[in-house]
Length: 270
Image (cartoon, rainbow, N blue to C red; front, side, top):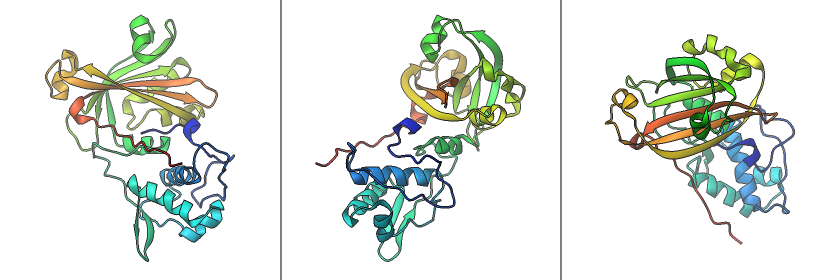
């Protein structure tokens, strides 16, 4: 699941550097328990590569000193990370970051924008059509965009790495300010929004995701190797820059049995 910057409870003024974690504190005045705050910070650092797969987290004593909390609080935070299968702990061996599933896997944990990039880095988009369109009522309903605006609309099939048949039908809507990506899009692999960042220098800081039920249309059923009318899932992701501009909206349609989405909810103690 994608975690937007607005959902992260504690962020330093500067991004976390891969050379090591920043010393930071947690607040007893927050609505969240201290161990929940620590869990979020460590989860983000794992996602950002501060602690890569196979590496060890700091010891309990080091975490206690870093966050100025008790050993009980640190152990509760680590317990939650183990429950999410992000780390594993062994006596006298410490706590180790668990490797993520292979890129070709249909199931993948996504807890940050960096994870979204990693997950889709090997995917290929085979373009069927590429054009500038004015958003009408039907497209506005599907995308959440405003009617009358002009957007670059790319349509085609998405291929996962290592698979010969398409995994989904995909539609990319790119803000006209970034429409120049059409020149390189046919040769591009992986997610589109890093390309926008590299070409225009505008950072994507928030990705909002919605998932809804749909039916696979006859136009895309055969390439997806399902029957028309088969149950499907439509995933809509809206990408926003730091100044609040919607840079891109992506719609992807998947046969329902090929797409799995999971989330973990816990009841706060106290």
